[in-house]
Image (tube, rainbow, N blue to C red; front, top):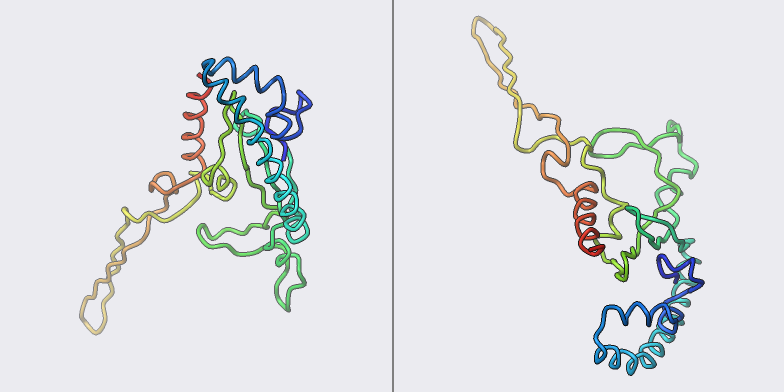
Length: 210
């Protein structure tokens, strides 16, 4: 798997990075002499373990690619070098399959905002971002592509409108009170959303940049 931001150095993977002068130079600037000695002492074992893990990952990738069409590629996210994985979207296959009778095959209904959207052909996930000498990864980062933006429509759970209807039946007056939901957004209601996560990441990256 490529290391984010290393494409210009000619370093293709983590194993090559650990053997490179680039890595040693970067570590010397951030470690004490004693820490550097410990690092150099442990590097051969670390490299051996990485080579074993790389072989396992390659086999897993072959299997994953055969099953899902997964592809890894480099790009940028929030302005920093990043590694992504792209897989085929099973919902797109369902959408593209022949529809019975009245279905037009052009749109599909989704819950939430009541809109009509066409599912994307691929699902993309960010696996890691490099900020200076740090690599940021984890579930919060990988789930970003699946999160809706903060301005996504939803009904408020804390606000409502009241509508009163009056009608006269056989000389008697009846009043019906309707409690109606108010239009809102995910951000306004405090729901987890993509904009909120990106703000968190931007704060983290600012600290890592120093």
